[in-house]
Length: 309
Image 1: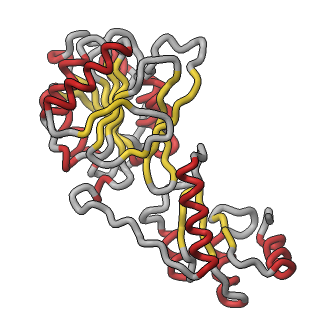
Image 2 (image 1 turned 30 degrees about the vertical axis):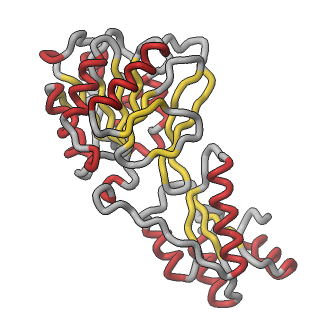
């Protein structure tokens, strides 16, 4: 282990490692600069790591140009699968093997790093059915929905959604890897559902429910979990009593997420989307039959600067 570029130089000379894992973010000299010096003076297999999104990242592309074997995202919440992926890449680099790259689905490549988060409560069953029925499975990023509903009814609702359309619908579970076109509903039990990005994909992360959280699943908790990657996020608040999701949506919008609320005229209860609009958390509102297509259109566009009060 080395905590700086200087320490890394000394450690490499002393140990002559078979492979080096190199963080892009380092004190003093970033990992790409260090890689450039290393490949000129002492070429060796290097696997780059970063805490941010790497697909399309200019620094990651530069690292590959300089000779890095792979560029991987550091998981915020390590799981068995994510650690195995890192280990496989390190072993492959050390032994001169080459792992087959994962080719993106051409129909969903524009959503390769995006995710759509949805919150709903009273009236949400019909609203979710309507929203999902208006969008094509092949044209959506992963979708995670927090619907206020007792768990025994939630399981039946998932089965109903799965029967009604061609979408891949299921309950989410801890560590689940999310794929474009998949729709996952947060369980309504004693743990909150979050999303995290690592190892080139979005994953479900379950956390303990706090005493001051009246709802489980909580839309606010779900939305807030995605704030570090907000520019890749779309968030929608559908009909529902109360204000769950409004603060989380505001945090997302302030960091560049695309946000929409259901129109008052199409809501059973204009609570959650109404509060979001009053906080300037939602960019706009749309009728329920239009909201799915509208949020996807906005997610394909660049959100150039958001000012909220």
